[in-house]
Image (tube, rainbow, N blue to C red; front, side, top):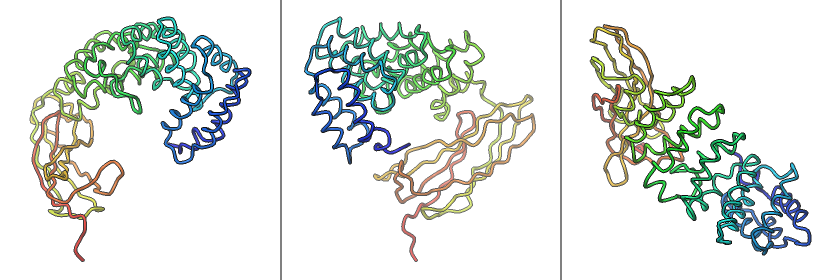
Length: 369
């Protein structure tokens, strides 16, 4: 991903100031200009927050006049890209501070007008937290919009675990609140909307696998040509966990297989090396077996306990009597998303959600020369 300076640096922020100042008439936006000149060293989200606060400081007007300024700025096609993020944050803040129902509804409408220029999924979160029931009513209406970006905002903006988004406790606690929105969109004509729906349902799988499987089953029973792909993407986390209900929905039921392994090519390895994993799977049944084959690495944590992480090997169909030979190299190298700890790790094979074998290896971080 590009650096924050490339997305919302001084140049973009200054262009935003010019657009807003032109739309605001006599307001000079001096605080916003000063903030635009002092963004160095700030992360992208912090840049947006600081600029939004400055916009509100420079435009100390009531909500109706504030919204009118933003809509005048929207008349320019130059208002687009990441400069929209702080503006959308300012819109939601101004509508909430106003406190009135009219301002809230118009604030939601203004976010819908802004979102084709850059998604307003982060700005809508405070609105959900302020008036959840009304916000959800409006977002359900968005599912019928002619604009795919507005329809996507209905799904993406209500995700329980939206990346970079503030948590909405009620949605995290009761994901059924947003199912009507997803039900309205899972057969959407737009790929970007359907992908958002799949990601939303996958978010729910963190804490309510039953709801996810119930919803996916209903969609498959009344879907279109895109629904199987959407459901596969939505169930990806449950499949990695070996959830039997999710696997069954995708056609991977229990199979009569014999698994040998996994076998490792070494009992000890140094951080930075590769481990060779071998195994075999034989179909002892009388019919072909559709298989999802993964392997699970049990990483050692700082306290000495182990935590599993699933990695994909293949999805295949194995004829009766046939044997699948597996040879997989697993690199154990330093990465930004995982901190390795020394100790005895382990590997299991997972076939259609059922784990087989248990092979251990000792990970050494600092080899003795």
